[in-house]
Image 1 (cartoon, chains in turn purple, brown):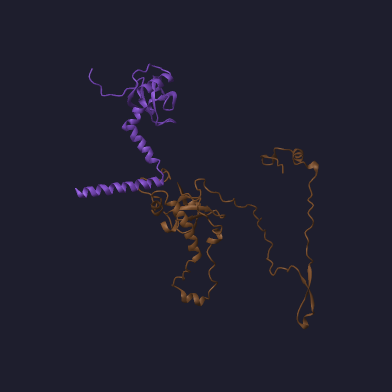
Image 2 (cartoon, one colour):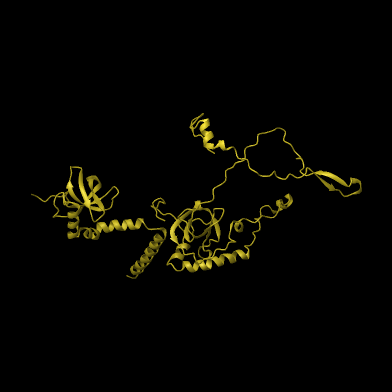
Length: 134
Length: 238
């Protein structure tokens, strides 16, 4: 078989990012596929209760739990997550870091935005001086 | 008083006898025991000076009106509504940094001191930092930020009330001639009384000491606020 262009598959154990709903922004694991529209997801250590979720509201991540049996209960999922350290891997990924940075930027209050402006000015000044020297 | 709730115009929830019971009319209608107010005598004897004026005279206590209207017009009923005491947004507490949105100092970031009895907010720049003096400001034209200064050490005198800030009455009416000659020249401004500058300095000194404790806060208060491209107030966190 030639190499498929697809790298991330909807499968049991795939770590997904929730795009919509009350748990938007969290990650969870696909534990069972219901039909062509929905799957049962579970995120015991990320605060997502076990529930059916439409694929429309999920994004696949490059992470997956390989050893997860189909229709595993929350306890098993939790154990596997801890064993593989998936949540830490996700948090270290640049995707997660970018999301965190955007969220932090949006939550800045007026004084913090002022501080950012001062910091940018300082950086700009240092760069300009270095460039003019070179 | 127990009122019969109107189900349909003309039809109440309770019948006449039910209303009677609800009002407790079997106990009788209360009569208050206030004594009749003392009415002064209609005429007062007054002694008049001068030889030919009769010495004493009966003068009515209350004079009849000089003018009666031509027709008996219906007087509108006096309103029994009174304005509510002014409320304050929960985001505004003493020491909060506010952004003024209108008026001479629009765009300035100022420190909130206290709410006056009229409902207006007492605010100061501090004057040394951004040129905003002790001033009254309307809550509606203000954005409350989540930044605040510790004003527990700042003593706000009780004399800083609404009467302190009202405009002093200008000199009485001038003659038409005077006004004609003065036309075109701006009215001479009264210099600010020394007491007001002293009050300003007193409050500002303790405030500035508290402001210096936070890094960049005095720079922040010095700078003006404005919206730049891509910023929308309903999406910003203040």
